[in-house]
Image (cartoon, rainbow, N blue to C red):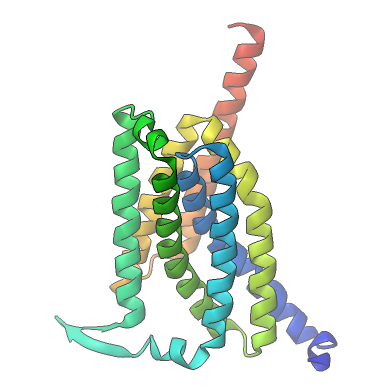
Length: 241
């Protein structure tokens, strides 16, 4: 352990892996922000805290199961010339879940569903939000940890990177969730991102890798345009135009 603290290579690996984990955590934060936006604020804060705590717990548990995780990438069956592993199947299932969930939420927004039915049974709504967060946390955690295994050899570095990334996710999730809740157009944009991320996960499951740089550039560019759009609306309100 002590030799890692004095090793430049270990610090470089920690910095690189932490940066990667933060980038991979963007998907988690977007999904979390959209999910909690449809339940009351007090429950939304609780759901966000539970979701991020579970994300950290799942990642640490998966890290402790390194041998099992490496085995997940071994082919379990072949179809039409493609070898599929358990990791591929989980990514395909998680991607399809994201696409279906985002499409359902987009439909609810377009149909102007004000969530009255959710408010009548807030306990049940909270329960289903937590269930969906758990499902997607497992998918994102699996992808994140398998990436970590490929980049670092020391489990201490992996755990440190995951903990730092989850803390940054926790700090950023509150402002992101409030911004999404206050600006309906950003929620629609976030849902479109989830469809895009879902498609990327399904493609990964079929061994067709879409470089994440393209996806995150599209997200960053669209978010910047939406930010200036929100800023312009606020300025128009102030000037009364």
